Image 1 (cartoon, rainbow, N blue to C red):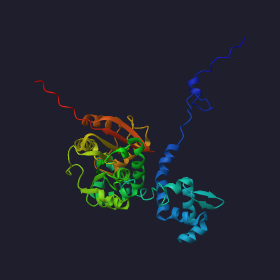
Image 2 (tube, rainbow, N blue to C red; image 1 turned 90 degrees about the vertical axis):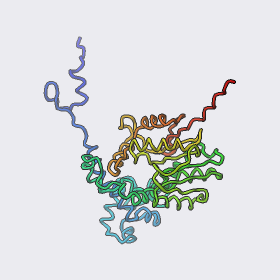
Image 3 (cartoon, one colour; image 1 turned 45 degrees about the vertical axis):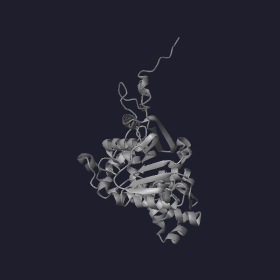
Image 4 (cartoon, rainbow, N blue to C red; image 1 turned 60 degrees about the horizontal axis):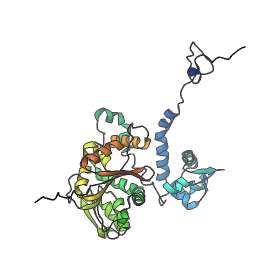
Length: 368
């Protein structure tokens, strides 16, 4: 009786075409080119979105409601065919809807791209990649170990629009963090916000703790953004603004209940990040807590593409900046003396370590 046998080379059949040429078959099915095309189109996709923001498309459609390209062109005084091409590209990005020639905002555009959206990123998008020209010279940066136009050459010019653009997202993150950190349960907390930018963390804690006070630090020229934001939120009278480099600005020892390092460590390199963690430890009172927010890569640097690309962005724009792994930060925090490390994610892509300075050890009783 005939018994079917396993086909020869069964492990090859899964990946070979039906032509079956050669013994064993050598005509492997080629991999898709989709990842290459995604990279090629990445430049265009970004600049399509940037152009849509620059031309005020999202805010205008929010004001007019669903609109044709012709009507929108009349509203913005733009040539119709060029505008239609841009609108269709934004639809392809899944950031607008189009039906029978009528364009409208979708939920993502309403939330993230309208200037007054609840989680707007409209001001962040132009500055998030860092200096655009640096990306065209990335190979030279890798060869030379330094970007052509590092942010450090004029930090105020770069960081002012950046901290203004990131404020909404960071403030949402800081506010939601209370669900995990419970800083609102503190009594008369003293907060130190190092490299505060617009001071979203200090504002969030002061909003929750009406008897709290904060020392807010950033570079002269950048700290004015924090002054404006704290005034807008009605907490400026409980803040001391202390301009200066966060590596050297004068800090009280054993003083603060909460120290915040919010998205600053990745600009400083490994040595600089460790130094900031050590400064935070010294500034905290015993049982005080550090909140260290950043983008953390996984140990193999491939499972969190967002953090990996952020690390490339830091390399492209800064003299020392890279993203570091969760393990590296855990080791640095532990080496500095912190205990009870926790990792929280108040909103998507926004992770923070929470670490505690241990209580003082009581002095041993002397036997008489």
